[in-house]
Image (tube, rainbow, N blue to C red; front, side, top):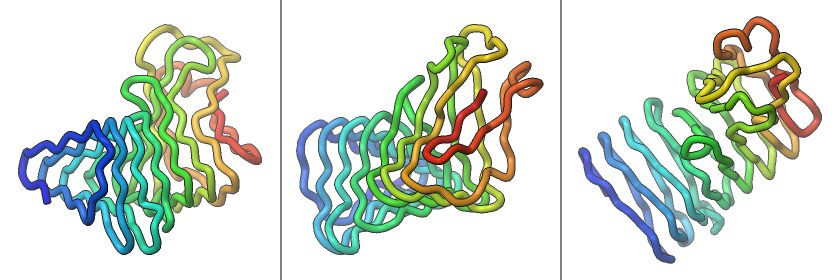
Length: 193
């Protein structure tokens, strides 16, 4: 358990049991975290999980859990045995980058996905789901421009999935992009174009 403003950093391969982050605690993973059977990685309050490595929650009954006001970010991979119900914010990348969930993901009502794009067509964060994505009514997509100028015709693949159900209730696009671009839900991806 990491409480308050504590930080736990992992840069090695580590086998572990339950990890709980409370308050403004942070877990920064650049190595590999292997959870054993019946374990949880839990984020409460305003906790932040930065995964730039691999987190294996792929044994039986391993769960990733997060409360509202928590944040999952980075360029790493989550290998899941159980569906993940995101109740907080997912923010792929450390600036521009991809985050991968091998397993099923639900973006729950009241939660959000933060995507950054640049003025170069195709240069954006990507949420990769190798499994089923469910977007509940009340979920928000926030897109921000971090550099450059957007042009009509720019195209950004921001989420990929195996299967999908649902749509974001609210989509916030930056500046002029909101005048001409729209999210397009395809068979295996969500694009902004």
